[in-house]
Every structure is written in structure tokens, then in C-alpha cells.
Length: 362
Image (cartoon, rainbow, N blue to C red; front, side, top):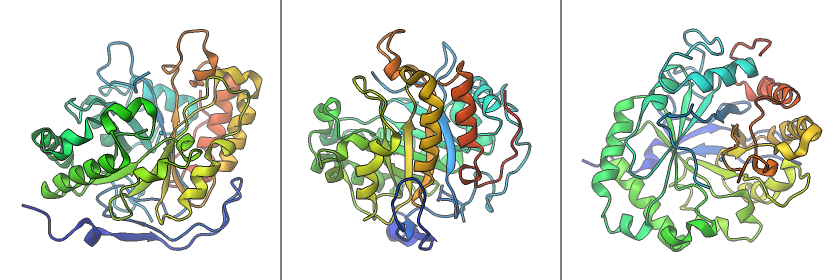
């Protein structure tokens, strides 16, 4: 049976008008609202932004990475930490070894753990369950499919199964479906902006019919897509989106380029949306060498924007064409100066809104 009314009945105006941020030159952000249910689905923190990461699984792991971005904390209605928050504590849980190691380097537990799943994959799986059991939010990045087939109902059984599985998880989940829909690589399955919007609404309707209320829907094109002025055409509407998001993929042909330059047009577009912002995939290329730490320090200033409520570092080299491709290698692991700078970002109070314990790292 459909849930009573529409998703708007669950709308929670979670943050009043907030002050101007620093670094991005954004001015005052709008009042932030979300259709997600506070205490059930992920909603933005009152102050600051959640910090998370994508950390690839060990070889042979089941998770699949991307092909060649007044709140309640998970497990706690008040957002206060529950249980042990020691970095690396959950290393023995399925899929958590690499995540725990990354947390030890940073000196704090992540707020968000990202997981990538194909369109037909069964989930939640090992890493997904381990993340939410450890008082972290799960950012489940679910690949897209042919939008016209979705609207025709050809995948309804699959979508219903996944909706029921997420509901049964019983923990707050960010669901980032069909990210980077604005790229040329996605055109064959997306077809058009109108087709994408229709498919998005079809999926949300099914989730509503299944009574799934522990999901926050994250709409996520590329930041670069706003340069041509077309990414916004894929936006399904304020009543259909809980978080607006952007991926910031590395430019293979670019010299040193600040994150503020990459995000400028996306942030400008976002000022007209009363939505929290997530930056779901960002990273500093190894090609920047000794300037990686500088880049991360400047990125920290840019991301301390009053509308930015979650940032997720892409700690991986999997986008690189080969071992020599340093422009697409984003993992900081093994680079002590970059690790130190990212630790500085992650432990800045703005990016630790749940006040999780911080150790010296390493």
C-alpha cells in the first residue's frame, strides 16, 4: 500500500537561514529543507558538515567501485556518538579492513562510508551492513539503468526488492542513484533529461509504495556539467530530492586547479535550491606532488560553506589509466604530507559535527 500522502508530508525544515560561509565567497545560504524524515533518514547537521570517504575494498572484495561524489547520527536520534568511536575499531567486520585503516590514518571515525553497487547487485551487503552497525551513515551509490525501461516498469520487481532490503536494514541511508547522469558516457542509457526525471520519479514512487522512509535521496551530476549550463536540466524538483550533490572528477589534462574553481558554478546554481549540499567525490591528484597539502588546505576553506553539509573524499587510484597516470590518482595513502593535510581537514570542527573523538592518527 502507498504511504499516506506524499513525501512532502515528511518534510522537515531542519536548518534555519544560516550565516555566510568562508572560502567560497557564497554569501548567506538559503534556509535548508529536506523531504527526509529526521531521526529516520539522514538529514544535515545543524552546524558544519559530515566527513566521509570512498575507500576501495581489498582485492577479492565484493564491493564494486565506479566504472572507468540538528541532525540525527546513525543509531542515535540525538546525533550523539554511541558505543566505542575508536578509529579502526571495526577492522574485523566484513569489508571494513581498508576503511578502518584509513580512519586510523585520519585519527577519527568517518561519518559516512561510501559503497558502490551495480544496478542488478543485491544490497545491502557486507560493507553496507558493517558501516551502519558502526554508527556511520551509508552512502549507497547505485548505478543507473535504461531510463525508458524503468518508466515502462520493466525493472519494477528489482526496484521493489531493493526498496524492501533497504527498509529492512533499519538504518539511515543516503541513496545516490545514477550519479553523473549528465555526462556523455551516460547518454545511451539516460537518453534525455526528461527521461531521467521520469525514471527518478518512478523509483521514488516505488520506494514510497514500499513504505521506505529511512532513505535520503541524493541527486548528483558532475560539477563540470554546470559549465555548459545543462546539468541543472536533470534536476527532478525540490519535492523529489533530499540532498543536491556534485562529483568533481579529476581532469586528466589540467595543471594545478583549486577545488573552488571546479565547484564555483555548481555552488552558484545551488543557491536557488533550499537543499543541503553533498560533495560526494573529490580528491587531490598525485600529479600535484608537493602542492597536494596546499590544495587540501584550500579545499577545506572552500568546503566550509554554510550550505555544504557533507563531503566525501575519493581515496582511490582506480580512475587512473595506469600506474603512470598521476593526474587521476587521488589516494593520499602513502603520502605523509597529503595524509596530514587531509587529517587536518577531517578533524577541523566544521567537519566533525558529531564531536567524534580525535586521536593523533597514523
